[in-house]
Length: 416
Image (cartoon, rainbow, N blue to C red; front, side, top):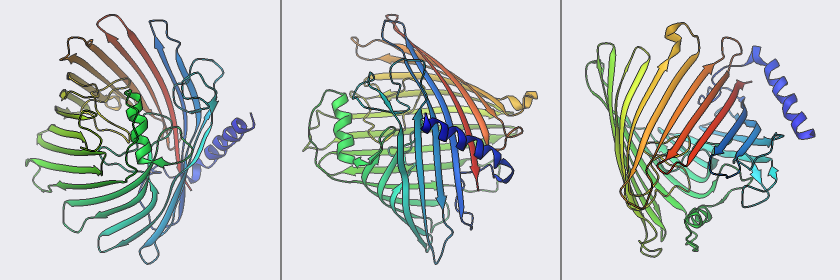
């Protein structure tokens, strides 16, 4: 109870600082020393219709960090992350907080950890970051599906010397998942992901080398086609290789903006590990338009023989609340609708829905569909930096198995 009281006191204190708070807490360096934070109160519930006990977690915590000013191109920063269980309603562990067991029947444990700690040197349009840092690359990213994001430890270089071109190189030795208190080697993350597939194997204790390049065209002509290209290679010696590419084309037609975004991913385990462990791919595309607050898209994805391998995050063509295009031998078809309800006079309110049908090529595997619905509310006109999301998903398989998933997420961002 002392820990819960501490967080409630912190929440109250943060709200009292609202008059001094700036809403954008995740903005880059501003030229002055600053503290920032994001309080998070989450409640996730998952129900099953075939007798399995429901999952239910409530967590209170967030991210609290510091970014220094630059001196001679040098700066440093750190972020503390915390997720504390508030469960009084029973149910098995969902995964917002830690556990004292390898299964969902253990006792819930608070997660308190150093999320980031790094030093950064910037010179000649190049930044070198050393330490623990959150990444946003396609297959190594924060993957915001739980109370706390992922993080990574190593060396990270970024160069923007050429107009419209961004080059990145990462040397990653350790990773941090959603509910751990400490970093683990990237090799251990691979072993644990393989264990979920029933593959018990020890892999080489090597780092991951990742190289990325992106190009974004710039034009003053609003009628011209705008293009953005991203390409990444991830190499873990004696373990696996991943190759990712994405193209995004946008064009305006009066008040309407159309877009087409195909992507491709190839995953292969090394000859040392054995190609029978992992050899798959995924490609697909989003085709849609935006007009007067309405965003509509058609989506298609094809996944190869093996399921997607995602020990450090993912960039699936379709990522839904419960499932996504991660299953092997799948064709997936989706449609997305999103609308900014502010245009109807409902200030700060937005809504979206995503429906996808997953059709297995393997006749022994069931087809299923999932429907996600989300209502978002920006509360800045009441409390600067506050927002809320309510998300509900239904996933149902051909044989009648059904999963219902409800998530309530409250946020409060502030800077000091």
